[in-house]
Length: 187
Image (cartoon, rainbow, N blue to C red; front, side, top):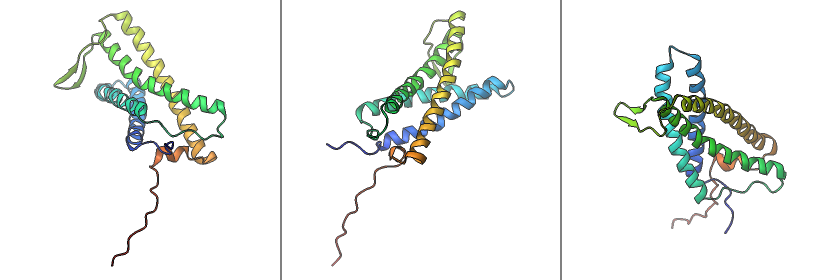
């Protein structure tokens, strides 16, 4: 069986959808810290967006485990291939950890995780002010780490697209081209 040359359609859809959501989430998080007057509606947006990212990350991880991604170019230096694999798995870990940390932080602080007016998530951590403080600090530091990894991932993608032109970027940007078929002439 030949190795795939492109990510499958679900992987591409989830990748670009989640990229937009994660970038939006990072800016919402910064705005929440910087603005008191806008804080309430930003929090109302931040919580359901975080849970949506968690659910999509689980779906994406399942898809990734079921469908092998296309191989990296054979001429890619070994250290770059290792860095690519490590950064991808680190992104998965952060996409799962960040929403869970936020949810646990709110649970420890005694704050409800309100998704909609009718839907409130149950607490996942005991109410404890010290635990809340520790989780809040971890959530903030991991947000910086996520921002740094996203920038590194974007830089690598642009390097592949504009400098190396080795097919890595198109493998996520679009599907494989279909082979030309011969049309049967009408009689």
